Image (cartoon, rainbow, N blue to C red; front, side):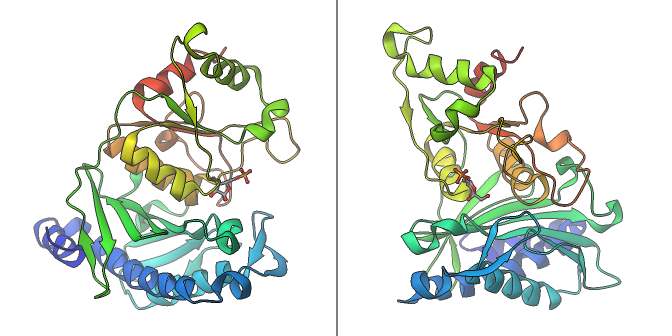
Length: 318
Ligand code: F6P
């Protein structure tokens, strides 16, 4: 398939049940191309990375670009009659859009935004759910999910559940197929965790990472490499490319009892892609996609990546 619109048109014509999700993705792609253009501005880091002096529904500092990206996505979805409601990490409550819409779009409009003024990749994550299921549905119900990365290239990973397709934004403002069969290798020797939180970890995470650090002489008998960009979309993209395991576990810090990342806006869509690419995504015990969110902004411990390595981690759970 040469480009995103062709893929969406083809899916919508063959599977009418997915047509509304396709329309929503087309709207999101237009918004993402505009967000990428804003981020490319020479002064974007300085001007848009400035803290606006407020915190979002999750207590994170809101950056100007967080708010702008949220407004751009809401405006794009307001033009798509198939979208019943918009759930945003940046907004306290669901935004009702179209009475006769059949899908709900949940989004983290600008994930990793603390990296904006350091010129590190950030992104837009999205999840598309049937409106009939209401706003608190397990990720297994997702019709489609994906994320855009605003980095050296502007890219998109998207799935309707069976496979993951990868696109790159061209100078012509079109998302072109990267011709990449996205699969996460089952094995890896690379982990991603914010190791500065080590003193707060629970024994399972501490034991697992200690053994990864043991090298050839340790119990794992292999040398592991570590990567932590601190921007979920960038860390995830790397894992889709070459495998790896990502951990943002629960820890002993106040407010981190369920980790940091949000189930509805971050973990569910990434987990949907991970499973479609042959990887695993869990909260420590259960598949992320089986969890029913208790609130819109609920956090969840999030471990995902190469299937055999996620299994290896679970053996440290008591
Ligand atoms: O949720 C926002 C986010 O920036 C993610 O993109 C990233 O994985 C995580 O937070 C980084 O958290 P920390 O700064 O605690 O390492």
